[in-house]
Length: 420
Ligand SMILES: *[C@@H]1O[C@H](CO)[C@@H](O)[C@H](O)[C@H]1NC(C)=O
Ligand SMILES: *[C@@H]1O[C@H](CO)[C@@H](O)[C@H](O)[C@H]1NC(C)=O
Ligand SMILES: *[C@@H]1O[C@H](CO)[C@@H](O)[C@H](O)[C@H]1NC(C)=O
Image 1 (cartoon, rainbow, N blue to C red):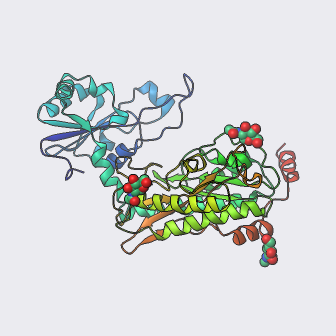
Image 2: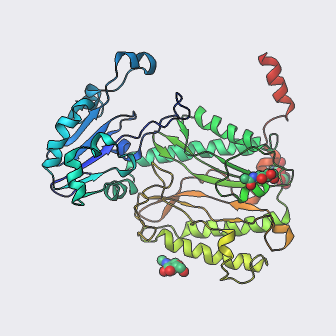
Image 3: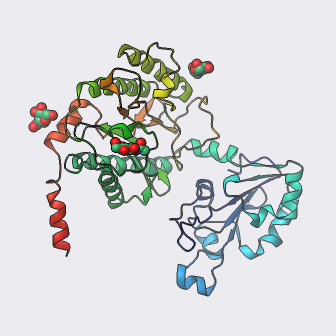
């Protein structure tokens, strides 16, 4: 990080704030990815400083004895030095004495805009530099670093992908007996956490039938109708590293012919785009290729009138993929035009989302399909991190018909009876 930071400049990175659900109940805390990347520290309330002369300096929160009773121990100055390997560490109450001098010794400041806090933005020295436009967003540097994953980061990315794949496979096998959006979301979360994931990467998207066409659907409260597809876009987090994958399948065990035609088009596009992943290619290039394939395919089905039609964007407004890492839409400062490099992880997620009211042959209406894989760019091309979960029609049908788990909803009542 220090190599990227210009001479005579200082970086200020605050931890994520605690967000409240009600006035006394906080949401589960999630550390800001930049703060986590720089310090490794997973608690709120700290501010980290990076500078060429200073190294890493951490200001740490101090718990009052009363707080410890309610919240437990807090990592303080000792932990900053011994566990997080800071070069210097002070309690937060010293920040207004020490940081102004550090700022005055610098000609430029970079800070984590996402978590900026009045603990430092209200300091006169900070305001003075901000007034002369010498305060900038640090993420232009952190995102460059986070974009390319180190071998130990890749180990966590692979573990996160592997856990999500195992959990989604078990969820598929569960879906015939429990075709409910909410139960499938619960099954996925349970299987991830039983395998060591700390949390979901995002609220699972479990859309049955037309709900599969709602790209960030999150209600997950419907029964999936017999014969409908279910689209599950899911991912978990393992020590700060996210996974993100999507499969679409018919819980009843067989695709209808219209579903299968569309599914094969999305699958072909998925495989073609995966083949294009290699150093030097860009997400934008791959995206353009996917648009061409899908426009042509949808025109052949009579769903689009002409291949160049702007109504294509009504059926798929999303990008073919995004960068993936500590955040789901990782490294947003990196453009989709950047030539990919070994160590970058991206998603490839072609889809089609046909509203129930769309003016096209009736058999295709209300179908939503997405097939999303995680791709690691390697020296020679790519590695699919989500390859272990089936996506061929034949494989999926065989899995559902021959390897479905669960003995129907009756078993639930038994469960309830025995726990009484
Ligand atoms: C989800 O599907 C149900 C039943 O088909 C429908 O009533 C509901 O409006 C859909 N939800 C969204 C957000 O589209
Ligand atoms: C992708 O398509 C857009 C819009 O058609 C075009 O402006 C852009 O130059 C294309 N980019 C690449 C890398 O092919
Ligand atoms: C599994 O199910 C499919 C139907 O989807 C069937 O064609 C196939 O023969 C079955 N395979 C086995 C090993 O039972």
